[in-house]
Each structure stands twice: as C-alpha cells, then as structure tokens.
Image 1: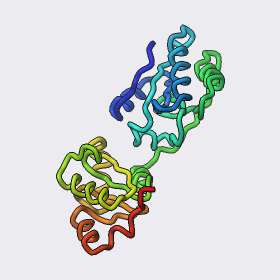
Image 2 (image 1 turned 60 degrees about the vertical axis):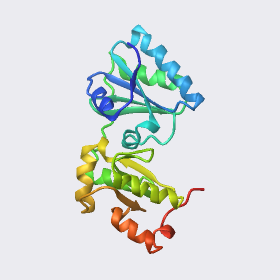
Image 3 (image 1 turned 90 degrees about the horizontal axis):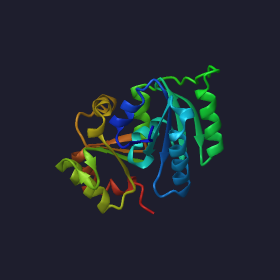
Image 4 (image 1 turned 120 degrees about the vertical axis):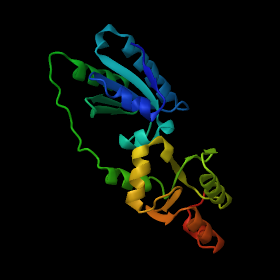
Amino acid sequence: MPVTNVATSEEFNEFIKSRNVLVIHFYAPWADQCSQMNEVLDDLAKSDHHKGLQFAKVEAEDLPEVSLRYKITAVPTVILMKDFMEIDRVDGANPSVLVEKIKEHSSKGSAPVYVTKPEVSLEERLKKLTNQAPCMLFMKGDPKNPRCGFSRTIVGMLDSLSADYQTFDILQDNTVREGLKKFSNWPTYPQLYVNGELLGGLDIVREMNEAGELEPMLPKKS
C-alpha cells in the first residue's frame, strides 16, 4: 500500500478514522533527514509484512494545528496511532527504532499496551493556540492571501510595524472559529493576541496604533 500524502486537516481527520495501526511521518521538505525517513516509510509500506498498517506523511509546517495537537516540535517525527490515540512515537531520524516499534505494535502474537492520553478540552486547546506565539492573529485566510478586508487591513498594519507574529486561519477550523468567540467574549474576526491576552479586533488595534500604544507591545522581527 502506498504512503498517503496528507495535505489538509480534513484529510488527516479522515485518515485517522482507520482501525489499522497508523504510521504518520511529520516532515519538512527542506530537511535531508526527513527525506531519509520518507524513503524508509516507502520501503516499509511496500513490505508484505506490513499489510495491516497504513502509512502517511504530513508536511508539518503546512498543518500547524495538527502539529500542535500532537506536540510536533521538530522534524522528522513519526507517530504511531490506533483508534484515534497515539500509541508510540519516534523523534528524529531513527529508522532502526521505527522498524522495531512497528514490529512491536503490529505483532499478531502480542497485545500492545496503548498509552491513552486524556482528551484535550476545547478551552485547553484554545489556550494553547492563543499562546502558540508571543503575537497571534486569528484571521480569515493567511497573510499572503487574506480572505476579508478586515484581515487584510490588520495584516498590513502589523507588517508596517515589522511585527513578529503568527496567524491561524479560522476558516479552516469551525470548532476554533466558534469556540474562540466564546473563549474571548469577542464575536468577530480578526482577533489579535499578545502573550495570550486579547488586544481586540481591527477597530481597537487601529485605535491603539494611532495612539502609539500598539508598536511597543509587539515583538519585532529580528
């Protein structure tokens, strides 16, 4: 079975519905070690010994929400999953360790003990997202392709101040989109957070900028 290239959050959520043991490689195309691990995955997926497993690769930087959910802090990282739960992982380029873990979890003669993790509540997830970077902008689209005029305006404002910020596209995740409104008690987007605290939407951020209050609060690009 070929390695599945998972390109969207929707594809990822669909892939992990499988009842098989899943082997998922979080990689970056610029990292040579990731290329090595992708080749290992290709070889393992072709082996008749692993017909009961499914393999996938995810470009970690393209799916930041998924990477955050599974605590992917460096690439390459391979996680093993079953029944929606992470059961093991391999950090770094360690083909031999990966082979051993796959053998352990796919062995018919053993019943592996699955490490269950408590389900993260929406509030905890939103706290992590708002603290994902010192300056977080929740917007429609992304800085290169804003999907509304308000988002385009606030991106232009932050860029003009050389702010170092990260963004989250709320159009890609309706749970976050609706949950953050209640979490922040702020009904519209964009929303700008600094050090996990909501500054406000476009109107408030614009007023702060005109008053000279915004720039000193923002982290700067190095």
